[in-house]
Image (cartoon, rainbow, N blue to C red; front, side):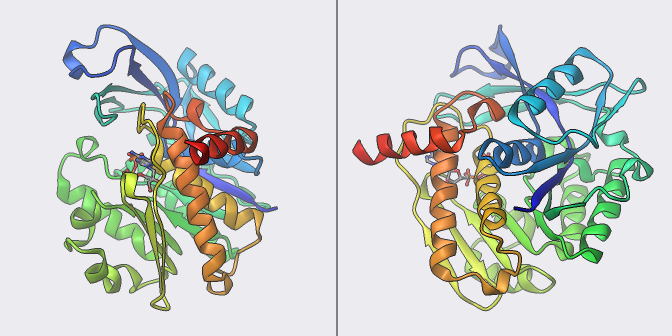
Length: 325
Ligand code: ATP
């Protein structure tokens, strides 16, 4: 089985001890390792796949903790850099009673944004089948240039490119800069995942069916459209569509739902050696989407992101519970 390589931010999420409060009212937080692309790589590793993560962490206690969590889930951390010149990024999160979140980020000049292209090794994609990235680390920075280098390497080595823009507007100085960065990178992706909440911001369309030409004008073969509790739809460049409904579960915290969804989907592509996206059957894709919905539904029933991601064994037990409900 080929590896997933993900690049981008890894950070400490401070999540509230109690749900249902505004961020300003939260008194106690618990620290958990996170960051969207890191969550995706961790979910592949938790499922038993091979995954590596490329980032830079501060030479500080939070960086040490993130390294420990990554090593415990079985992620390949050999390309992670450490620096004394910047801190590991932090995010404070509040959880509304319905599981939705508010964020406050401390990442003005953080370690991950300063990963230099020369620190991305020439053999970084050895044994990799898919490269995955998100948008938070596409702000003007050495890290943006590192993304470009790695994406160019992927394109020249027949490694599939997967992009989940995962819009976090409060990390950008303007909505326009965020949108422009996403638009700059969309043309390089073979697989694009967006959520219903991001569609209009990215494409200008309110209906996914109207936005298909927009997404398929470049390389994209698969457009995956997630719809929270309603599951997901997948559109293919050949005009076909596959749908899979969501699972009804008791949601505790939606942190990492989208990341675990795309992680589980990419895991299935890698585990089934589906590296030619045009040759995967509709039935197979439907089963991958169902698997990803189940995996993400499980994540919403637990606290945090990486900590919430199931192993294959835990997922099987969860499936039996959901089916017998
Ligand atoms: P995130 O909130 O992590 O940023 P996202 O906005 O990228 O996620 P969503 O569409 O909210 O993506 O959720 C991704 C997937 O997670 C859904 O397609 C579904 O499989 C699962 N999911 C999300 N919310 C729920 C829920 N309330 N109940 C069951 N499954 C859910």
